[in-house]
Length: 317
Image (cartoon, rainbow, N blue to C red; front, top):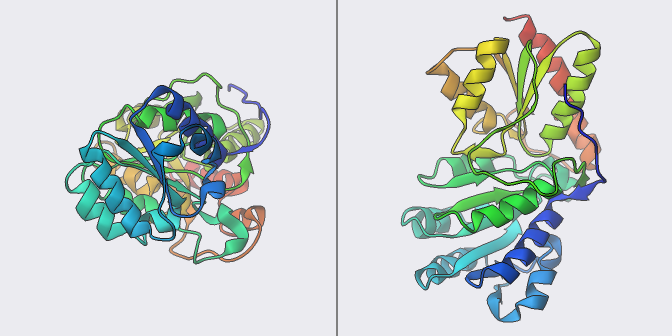
């Protein structure tokens, strides 16, 4: 299997900030809006270089979505920034009615997703946002895995016409994808080939899947690892090609197993090639306060949980 190297831990939200700054230099139509969380979203560089293209809305997320929708009418490409919980749950009606229904070209950029938000606790650790957003007609949903990929995704979505939900996180995680990568929306990435089991992962769980695959290899189990950075549109062909070879699959995500990547995979395979599947994700529960590492372990979202799911699904082949 191909070995990936941690190039130095970095947070995916900083990847967003770097991508946004680059867009500020290359695309004059890109504007940014924030709900009083500039530092958390790493938007400082964009603001420093483009003060006239930044709008501080304050703690008024619903208004931010409405303003962003309006800006598209004049040809602007608005990037909104706040925590994932406030980017979706708090403003779902505004997104549905003002952005998705009319296909507005708004980029909803959401930081601090999942339990790795950590000590802020359950009220801020949204675990249902992927499901909420993927159900909106015409909404593209992207969940990159590291700093480099988040930066590349941020730049790529500016060229995509239509609403996008871009999800990323708070903690520093392994940065292992290429610096100069080309991000292709809706195109899954094969990270390592295998013959015994397919592991499809998204976001922070991609690195955990690679660690699990290395451990499984030592046990004589060949795992194929696929990075599903785009939940919608879903690259079903890549998954189908893989499971035809391996005969079973594990999905892994820092999200409720209800409504997330796992259900997308299961729904696709149910209508193409029914395949034994195990789900790594939170089990219909809220999070709690704790360090990211503690919470990932408690809620079964780490490499050990992926490895356990693989051993279980192999018995069902």
